[in-house]
Image (tube, rainbow, N blue to C red; front, side):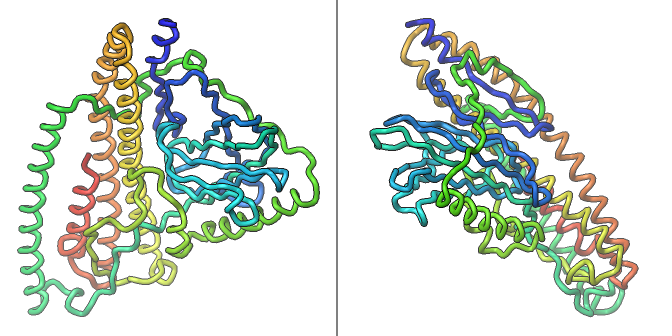
Length: 423
């Protein structure tokens, strides 16, 4: 018995920034053998991912699944239905650990008997399927990850007025003085906030060293088999009856509408709100307090000069890269906090287990300084690229009559972004 308990204390962390890998929902139960659902390129929609297959739920048991292959900016639909319309299934979507249930649906209360989870997540998406039926139940799972949708940060640009255009006219000078004074207060506020954040981080690092942030490098790689979590590949879809095919046709019709909406990158805001963020580490709207900045061109980039189109494309690319950087960091923190908390709870069951766990945890905690250093270095690189995109916009604005655009307006947005993406 003791050897098995000791094995329970081994943590699985396979995190790699470039490969976009996050571990499946965490567990210390070696009896849980989740089924891996690996998404592949959608045959019809560029940038979308897809999976379809049949599985079998044995009577009064639980099937564990986790979806891999999606990205932070993709919106994931998971469809589940019993091949026999008389059978009832229940499915739970989970976050970080198998015991942390985010949403529950049943085929008996779902439209056309089809469960549909709409979620966003940077890490693997875990869900379970159960039933109280006294017989085995074949069921179908279809997963779609839309093309990337990168609209939710919104546009900060607003149409410049006549007063905004010149910096050396009478009214313009007044505007410059006002902006300069505003900047001074912004710098003071930023300085105070940075001081408070520094003090808070100092306290947290002093009191709460059980926090673990895993990012960029692979710090710990353990054998999945030693943890009791073997991967079972999904089987191919077999021939089904007419009703089964009709259901799949309806689902694929829904997937077509979803992918076509996101493929244009012009999906309506209410389309975004249909999807649940798994955890609070993902953003889904314009950052609070985002400033509005005047621009000669406040409409579609295609209706403006070429320099606006290219500069704003780089401007948005940098913004979403910074957003992704912060999301990886925050989601890693949430995942590892949950895993460490579970390890701490289990380690209290046996003295020897506690000693082994504390030894493992000390090794993990030593990586924190390296993780933070890696995050800060990457952030500085991205901010440098973002600043260059603002300077390109400055050149374009100046060419169209907006004098000293960066000094008067662009720097305010840069300061906002720099502050937002601090750890």
